[in-house]
Length: 116
Length: 146
Image (cartoon, rainbow over all chains, first blue to last red; front, side):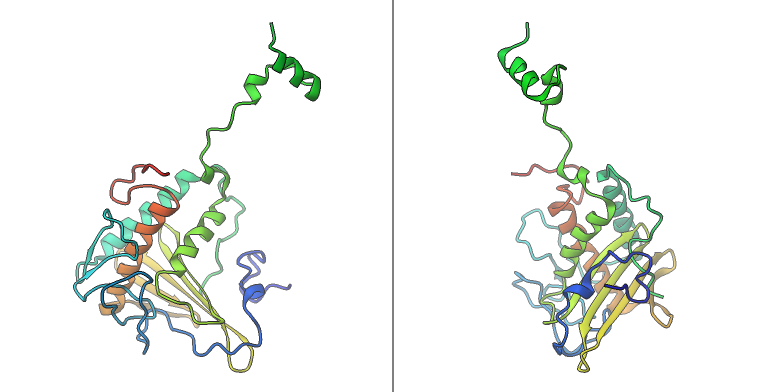
């Protein structure tokens, strides 16, 4: 299958266009991080979900937790999210991922096409 | 004197080197065999589940691309049976989280949008660290797995 525009950087990843069932009307897409009419609930969540962005968080409006009933799971407080925390998490993830690699992806290709 | 096992193996393989050296199981962890792209794919599978049920016919991915960026990608088939895609890139900058969409459109997210993005990042981090890297999200130390 020929890559779509924007996928030329890597025609093998992802193979979404081979998996989407063509000819099926799926309704309107959720616009990420914009207000939507539906409320999404993370599977397994017991508390009230909040309407958001096309991405939903779970919680009672003040506290949020992940879908796994893990006693060690961190609880997040609403209104306490800081850009600095996001930056730290992002950096940690990338560092942990690098640490797991034995064969670095040094193909010179981006892992994902640019959004713009 | 070589053991009977060693002799048998030498006969079978034609290799007279000490089999104890090459019969050892690798001590590398499973993830060592994966590439960065494969790890991202695994993470993206978790990322896609953070926001509830994906509508039928949709394909959704959400993942941390690198030290500075997150990707939201969604694909669906519209009423004209045409494949539609939307890719949003979130760049983590000192000034804030810059949302980049095709157009191009650039905006720093704020308010509820920023709040929810932060929550999603936290949830992603929790699950990816535990389920893929088997590490404690707080300490980064390996956690015992069954």
